[in-house]
Image 1 (tube, rainbow, N blue to C red):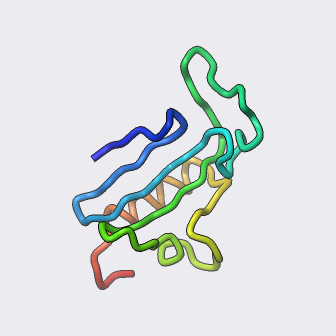
Image 2 (cartoon, rainbow, N blue to C red):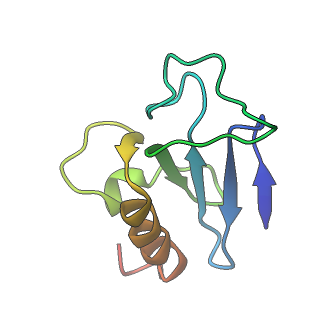
Length: 97
């Protein structure tokens, strides 16, 4: 399932029950963190984004997918990094993390 979140990002819920949030608007840990005027022609762009991952019981799992972090939200990730993490989340099986 896809969900748009306040016009500054999205969530994807995968069949395995995990959800990844990708946010790149004002207040998110990205290029647009301090930029209140980010919409241009109805579009929002950023070179970086923040992500968070949780399961269907709302248990945070971000730290299980990204080693060495101390938060449930990870910011300033490039598109390739977000994509690689999304693949891991999609392919997750209960015993693999």
